[in-house]
Length: 294
Ligand SMILES: N[C@@H](CC(=O)c1ccccc1NC=O)C(=O)O
Image (cartoon, rainbow, N blue to C red):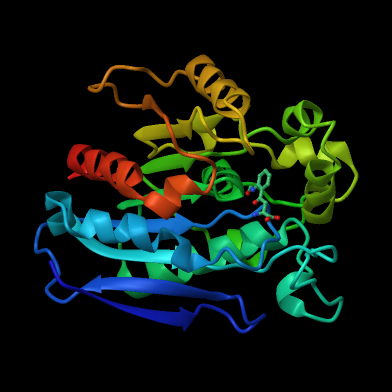
């Protein structure tokens, strides 16, 4: 399979409102073909993690047989929260790309998906993959809220993004209050959550994605895959286990034939970022999901 890659803006808000597109030179003809949309991690603030972080995963995926069912892949950048203590690239208070606060991140993600749905007309035929805080953002797409403390409307929500058929959460953060308390001994964790969401823990709870009435917000959802390495030294198995349990309580079933199914893929030997740096195991998981949806 041959694909061409370009990076294009999806809005003019900042230098980070862009996405990297990988398009097949000869698109699949089947109506069952599918898009992939990837959301990067980096604690809502790391300037050195970009849309290119999925390149190794995409390379492995494109050299496997499920690639023939892919109509396109997009990897999103979005505005980041302040990171004034970054050792080599601290954020400036004047940079619109580095002063985002919730709901800016999810608004950018929704704007990007809407841009793609408008242009390529794939509707709900896509898989959303998010790493770390990108997993939070992926499930926020399916949670479909008027984000923000006052539940104010956002342009992206009013324009109504169709949520995906499947979400793959990778080394994800799903519940902010329990995440911050698990790492209470590491001030960096509370710090980046406060930079992204502020200090009001009610906002953290509302932005979290573990306890959600998915029947109401995500009627088309067919599959959730929670991927987590037991050797992740930054985000322990507590977050994915919490999400997994919550999905079960909301009716997601373990058997492959179920209409709304959940899977847990436990990886070994890979640290938090090594899951995408290596990309092989992740490409295998994505290929299996493509196989079940095409
Ligand atoms: N790469 C970030 C750290 C980071 O991304 C992170 C650290 C701890 C727990 C979760 C993290 N990322 C989640 O998106 C940094 O170097 O500051």
